[in-house]
Length: 269
Ligand SMILES: C[S@@+](CC[C@H](N)C(=O)[O-])C[C@H]1O[C@@H](n2cnc3c(N)ncnc32)[C@H](O)[C@@H]1O
Image (tube, rainbow, N blue to C red; front, top):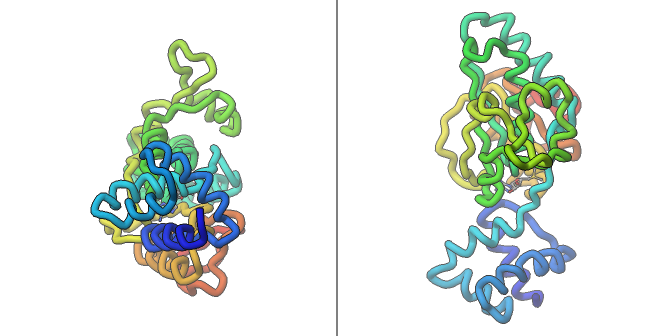
């Protein structure tokens, strides 16, 4: 991949998704897209750029985005966030609104589903009996490949090992005939709606949300995109609603619409 092709493809990616890839990632971009070239029977990145720019470009753009997103995740990543969610959001709400309280949560950039399932298990274990709560989790991602896997809720038993044991016993089932695979239970899956959503474009939903998790997503965006995104989250959160960010992310210098609640957890003012 030459410099010119890299610049063109990186430009498309940023305009479409907000994701910024710097020049030193050229090798990585090339490595991930070479599979697309092979699948399409193209001989060079120049031809690939021509395809993206041509009349059928939109269809291939989705494949390009799927290939270039980074989807690393695991169950109960940064466990202190789930302790915070339980003790600072769910339990106080249960105490103050004992009659079928409504709780709307959003996992923005949910990847293969481990984050929204961790949220759902925390909700189900705290707010019981389940029918006594009007709780729903919206889980969105731009990558159409990961969403299919997320909705199926099937993982290797090894992936399930970071789930606390009590939750594992309660919310995981063995997949019939496949001893090394587990599936998330139906009651947990029923709490989640998986949808494709590009954080860099218009959003169909109006909110409001009580909680937004957007962890290890904005880290790939530049500062002006992060600024816009966090202000849009503030618009959709109820006053006092919580925003959970990844361990290397912060709102400092980006927006004053939140105050800190805990490490990488922010409360909407
Ligand atoms: C590293 S994963 C983080 C998964 C999970 N939130 C976690 O912390 O474990 C980042 C996810 O953000 C998604 N993503 C990147 N840009 C996006 C955009 N513009 N709109 C929606 N999702 C995006 C990627 O597809 C990827 O699945």
